[in-house]
Image (cartoon, rainbow over all chains, first blue to last red; front, top):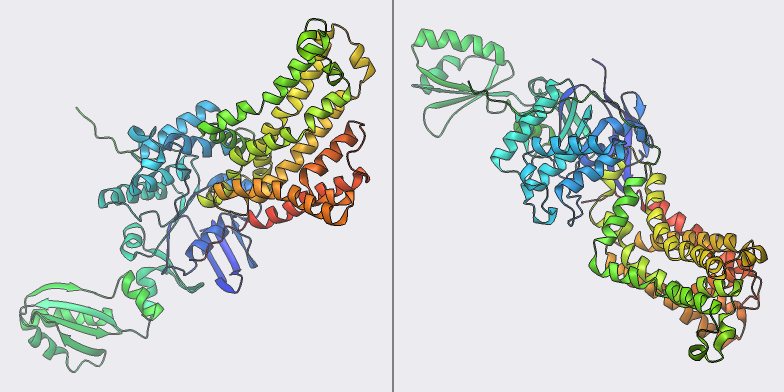
Amino acid sequence: MTAVIAASNLSKWYGNVLGLNDVSLEIEEGITGLLGPNGAGKSTFMKLITGQMKPAIGSVTVRGRKAWNDPGVYQGIGFCPEQDVFYEDVTGWEFVTGLLRFYGYSRTEIRERAARALDVVDLTADKDRLIRGYSRGMRQRVKFAQAVAHDPDILILDEPLSGLDPLGKRKLIKLIKDFKRQGRTVLVSSHVLPEIEALTSRVVLIHQGKILAQGDIPFIRELIEAHPHQISVRSSDPRALAARFVGDKSIQKMTFGADGRTLVVETHKRDAFFSRLTGVVLEAGIAVEEISSPDDNLQAVFEYLVGK
Amino acid sequence: MATVREKGYTHWDGKLGERRFPWWPITRTGILLAFRKKRFKFIFAGAFIPSIVFLVGLYISERLEDFKAIIQGSDRLLNIDPKYFATYLTGDWLFFLIVLVLAYGAGGLIADDLKHNSLQLYFSRPLGKKDYLIGKMSVIAFFVLILTALPGLLLVVFKLVFAGSFKFFLQYPWLPLSVLGFSALLTVFFAFYVLLLSALSKNSRYVFVLTFGTYIFSTVLYGILNGIFRTPYMALFSIPANLRQAGAFIFGQKLPFAFPAVWSFAVLAGICVLAAAVLNRKIRSVEVIK
């Protein structure tokens, strides 16, 4: 698959502070999550893609064109910044139509597009209210509306779900997934792991200006050899189950959960363990209620990589 | 049977229009936001008072006999020649009103964008830094030209209408060009001056104070230095003095200060260059470290 966004040895300093450090990565069509704690360099990366900053070293291209100083590139990009970016004394309608004017549409076209974008985010009824009176969630939604109103191929969303209520989050997640289904590219940043997990399994982990890992979450998890996989098995007799695995050299550690019904196994050979578990359960007649992998998620992957 | 329709985004296959003036949305927004301030409307309307006074003077000058009782020997003040137009355009009160209009209506042009983090929205669109600055300068050009070139040219036209002949125009054919030339100089200077100050703060009120403060301080400084050194060159420190000197040169009038006008042009150009350098640096400085 062709890379839509490609960064090559990208570095950016803010005076003496390093924002991004030698980042090289390719982002393909679909949704990619940019994940990292506050100050990791997510917003810097997004600003470099959207041409708001010039890279100190390296380059970033969008569909093969350099992102810096080429306004033509931004025609196909929709950007939803993290911070509030409003003139408080304009209405939501004026905000969206005002920004649509940069694309050279006719007046009718601007009105149609603004109406459609505001309808998508359920702000039609409030479009004539001043942004000053908007709630946090409404502000977030009108920011999203301006980002999609010109129908971009690439959507760059910086913490788009922050401040939204659960219903609002659900709606926005659906909209973002709709974008993906239309074959477009979405780069979405967040420091809230479940938000990214709800959107995509393809992530870029960024920390202190460096890319820690990139790819699917299970794939990245497999690569972290230093940390064995945790497998939690809730059963009627966890101790009997543990006794069957005591001699298994592939198992690093076994602990019992506080509820007295859970056995937590740590192993590097997860597939082998699952194969053996099936046989053991059948032989011993132990009733297994639940099997889960507590560290096979983004939170765990992130913590392992960042070392927190 | 009812159908449940999911809301989703619909792809648009239309054609994008050509963007001949990418800066226009910036200008449009700037002008609209200025007129949204109630006080600004009064200030802007008040800024036309000098032009109305000069128009009345023009009318009276053509009807001296009718107004003899009113003017009572002040008719020499109503001698309509290029000096009359230069007096209007290089008058301290007009400069003051222009500064007032710009400080109130245009002081927030960049300051508000910095305050509201709007630069990131602008520059993630098909808009370059040059377009952005042209858009902002066009807002200032709109206000300055409407207070200088428009009334200046209308005064010339009304002079011809009231006189009922083209004699005045044939006598001073270069006058409209002088009006346009000096208006252009004021536009360029005030565009850089106000945008420079607007880029220095995120608070438009502070920019308002800064605009007036630097303008008045420059004159005060001139007064102090002139008192100490007793040389006309100290007028180079005063913004209005330099504008008057340049205006007198453009209208072919006697220079108000005893030094070549090129010095004043150099000072005004220097301020513009300084402003351009600061703007070039500040406009991209949206990089916030949290």
